[in-house]
Image (cartoon, rainbow, N blue to C red; front, side, top):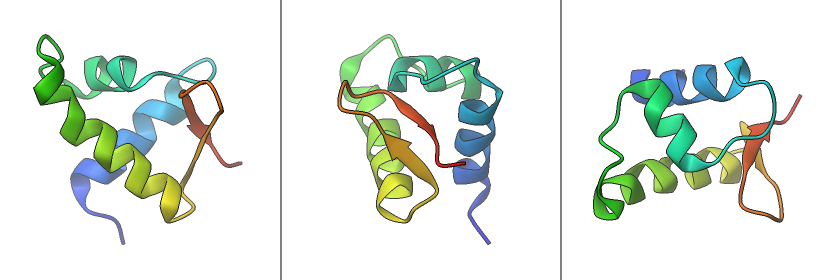
Amino acid sequence: MLPPDHQRIIAAVRQAAGAVMAREVGEAVGADISVKAKLEPLRSKLVRLVDRGWLRKLPDGRFTTRL
């Protein structure tokens, strides 16, 4: 079972029409994206989900679901 914040991130990526940038995921989950330093923890969570096989990171830096 994933923590609730990770579940919200995955849901936001799944609801997107295609691959998304971390900033778009941040907007969807209600994170403060106005400052880059506040966006980095979200990007870290996205990369962690990629490492665990829940998401896929494209070469251009966008994220998408594996399935």
